[in-house]
Length: 214
Ligand code: SAH
Image (tube, rainbow, N blue to C red):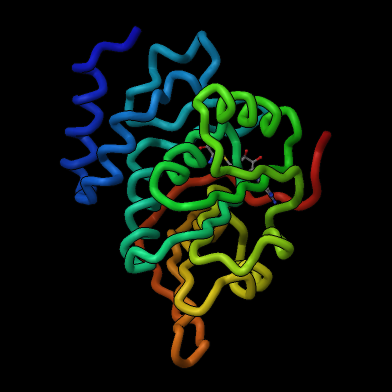
């Protein structure tokens, strides 16, 4: 069992790195990250590092989960009802989002990862999440448009399909690039319907791959 002190140390670290949104910090404090890892790794759950979840994929570093979530909330100006996540992975980021917005849709291309994530979400009693086994580069058109889209895998370029699934005023937070990546924020301006892009900070994510695996 992880001590409260270990979790508080993580929170302090996130604040030291500039995470300021108290709702986000509170949710991270209350989300049991160890449940999203294999038992052999769970003792490292409250370190601020990314950790393997199998199939060559990783659970993102808590700092970047917190940062992307606070960017999404701030850019959307508090009106986040429907949010799409690309790359369910362990379901940790999904769980964080589900505590902050009305309804989360999350797409994963690797079936066994999705199955495990589904089981964890069920155990945690989260009922405002829908999962889909699909190539999230195409978004989830049947459920769009979305007030927010957050991708936890990096494409070379921002997929047009994701932009098109933003509601007016909607925001997309996505890592972009290959060897070097930058976090991008794309906003669909409500008045002009133009897309405005800001390049925020260097990041390191697994690539957004096409197709699905069983
Ligand atoms: N949000 C996850 C991070 C997992 S890493 C978590 O908190 O654990 C990124 C995930 O994106 C991986 O599980 C990977 O399989 C998935 N992914 C990569 N390309 C994808 C695509 N085109 N569609 C859906 N998921 C994708």
